[in-house]
Length: 112
Length: 112
Image (cartoon, each protein chain N blue to C red):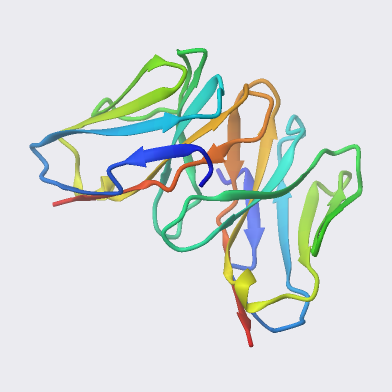
């Protein structure tokens, strides 16, 4: 275990559903990230939060909405997704933006 | 635009062999280069990392070679074992941005 916990591990949702992914880190880190991992593509950075403030939005569609209520928790709210959004969504954290990132095990999302 | 190019896409070696995975980057502002190892169903785990002021770094059986002028770096796995079978990702990071840019990944299979 890396100290970064993601729930749920698997999620199947319809295109009209609203769901949320949760990430929690017990490492005392101040930076948290969302990445998307699709088959045969590099991991794509989606969002960066540093001290609860969003510092990076990598041109992510608005159907993905992040929330960082405190330095230990990060959410990704999903609504009206498309089948091509099916992927493994990975959360990561680091002490700050200058140090190594530790990844959670990911949420396997399938949009039907 | 692929900022970090990784090759080969897949690699098969016999136990005891020395697989080599290569990466090239474009942006000279990158100043930290980690390698991640990912097993099926798990998130990427940091394996070893190097900064551009060092030409080589060894940790156990894993070695990074770095060529700053060529903007290339590679991972060597000495005395490879079946347990090393996984997907390996190189990455590049620009300090103070939190933006970790990944290569496309290399799936390594080590045959007994």
